[in-house]
Length: 457
Image (cartoon, rainbow, N blue to C red; front, side, top):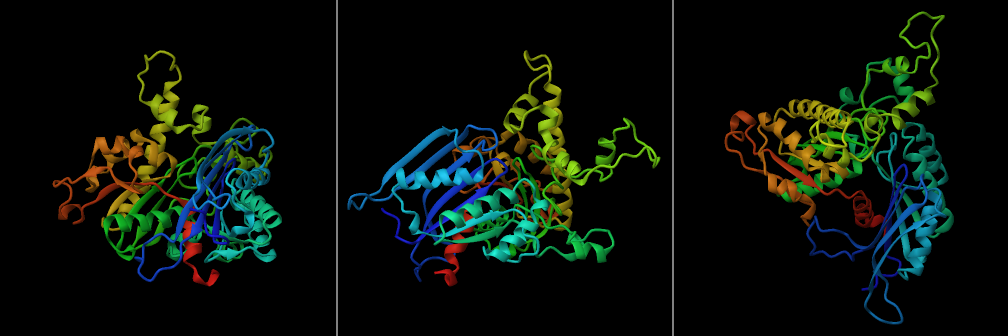
């Protein structure tokens, strides 16, 4: 059916070199609907990748609006390379043209645009974009250099191209606001730290919010009674301990570079390492006369863009890394296999550091270990490696078939473990600790929240 006129919500997720776009229609509120019922319906989705390495790849899939008085919509699908897309602004502009030409949807029917903004500083809730809030987000760009700048460029083009629609910023940091002060604080002069906002903020909050609600529904348990260890693993990766439905701790800190390593990020390292890494003298020295200053932007560029498994292996494709990590030394054409195994095992090791720590912080009272994100949802061998190690904590044994078939499941949450009576008794925390995979959806999380907020409609 044609989406209701003036009832559309656009959700945008800007990556460092990509843009995900999803269009939803708001459902009419019904007093008989269950509390956890979705408030939106999917209309269409689009993705633009390789924006910084043209030609960009454009994909569009969904339902076209009704035409010529017909009450039925039709399927629309498009996939192509586009030379004219050079940045996030031109990527969104191209999408708008396709929206009307391919899907026959009028831009005027879009009432709200939800933007995922990685760093929200001290924003406690989503905000409508105004001149003031735009400038506030702009000031935070240095703390999330791979994402905030891209989001702002798309926000600006939305204001220019769709002036009738309200743009709302949804922040990844908001979910982690309940973290205790002693966990969020840094061991530095607090007067300076507070003045400059130096503390742990945490990220991937929109994903964690979606996962929390989805797992609660799957386990038939209220969110406020749920304890989870969640692994959002993608080119940017983080872990989160959720206690009684709130963020207790998370691996990322002041910026997304801390915590787990990523495709091009270093993850947590000795803070002095970067100065020795960039020392031009060729050796470590503490002599003032031989010291060479390192510009902050140079250090941030190395840690954000020239680190991670890309520099270890030459590729950002973790699927390829996992595949080659399993090959034997003598396998033909894999002379550099050791670097893939190094990257794979390094990632597993860092993940286990957080799983173990969060297990202790939750007093062993954990309902489930949850995998999410591109790698978490797709990497069978990574989940196998982690599952083997967490058996000693009382987590259920991995179901190899379910683990291998995750990609074929239509459910939002999939269990990849089976009850293990030897590990799920009182000595293991007294709970049945499941291992789950959640197909997270940050765009839905934003649009659904927007639709549920009756003050906006």
